[in-house]
Length: 577
Image (cartoon, rainbow, N blue to C red; front, top):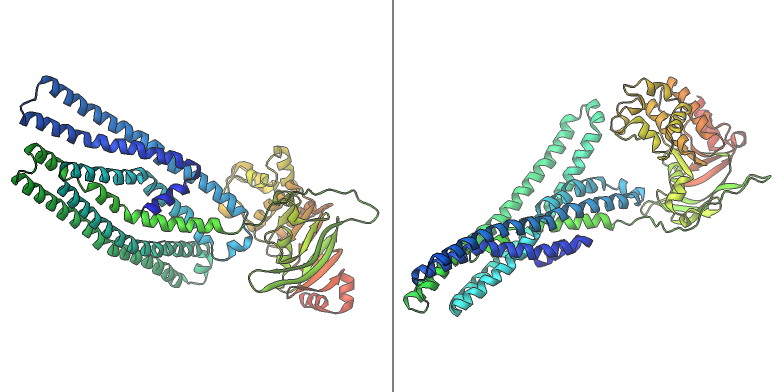
């Protein structure tokens, strides 16, 4: 238990001083809570000894009032130092998590980790924040208070002290056995929570496909099974915890009865005075409250321990190294165009399976290089490596003569704009979705980018124009409209290199013309790396690379590749037919 408490405090980082300071105020609050009992003992003692007078009565009354006021004050200070600090701790932690996630390779988000991240944010952090941070100081107070109560028993009579110590030992034994059980079930419970979150996300994201293929029954059953599994584990947790909790309550009751019996025996044997007997009777039923309450928090602390494991697991995911210090240097054009992008013997593997094998090519400034080939051949991986969504396994990628690992990710992304088939727009205004391209752009520049992307006219027809809030993922816009807004974003960014996953591959003819015009505006005087699906759109490319099974099997321009009568020529023939 103490190890778990220490772990929670260490997790608070720079705020742990405030948490530890709250121990003092919580302890003082505990003393003030017991002050009325102590005053009551003195009051009864004065009456029994015939020493009560007006002065003592006034003093005891004022002292009782002061103790109540101080208790409220110490509780307020403890809450400020503890509960409020908990919210600050997790506010900072969420910001750190966001910063951490943006530095992870894209592979992390394709390995089933979305449910883990969602569960950490929505369940684990919230649980600790709301259920644990507010009781840390009280738990430490319980330990101190129990020690003081045992010392008081030893002061009254050594036999009372020894019996109270034995009962505390029984509490600790039961508590440790309960801890082993609850720790095991807490881990399973939190894993089930993660699995449930993953299933809910999968169901929500795929609801369109599920409905269109009339799979609601099958998919709903999977989701229902996850809910039932989570419910069963929660019940199993309580079933496993319940007997130990009852054992604690029985120990509390039996221990109190034994202590009372020993007090009565000592009193009858005239080993303790009647005043002491009254004092013991007053404190008796509070004797083991502290340790009972301490172990009563066991369930929430073991769940907290499992939650911290999962939080640390996410933070432990290896980030892409971003310690580059070099800067890109824009060299003036010479008679021969300079090399803007170079892949030098690049190999890459997602896990153990090689995806790219010894890929080498150059892209000159202002030229278009198209990547074509069968699905799964490695085209998208080549483009993703340029943006450092992953790092190469071997070889290197150079931009403007610099290895992209030797410059910061921020500087690299300033050089690159990307337009993919799958567009994501944020639940925000149209204006802000475009301005993401360059947040410091003026309103006039944003509007001009929208005009060049051929989306100004339909934006002005929206209810609030540029201030219209679009649904998450751009749900309130058509696919072609979403695509044009994403192109406007790239036009505004105005990066020298454009990665283009042919944006017109899955839109209607009306939108295709507008999108092609928008792409033409985007690509003026830019260096292009194009993933081509429709071969007719890359006939004029300066260089075409045919990628298959992770290798470049053909290269050249359109006419050269047709004359070879190889894979490219076969692909052109198939599309023509």
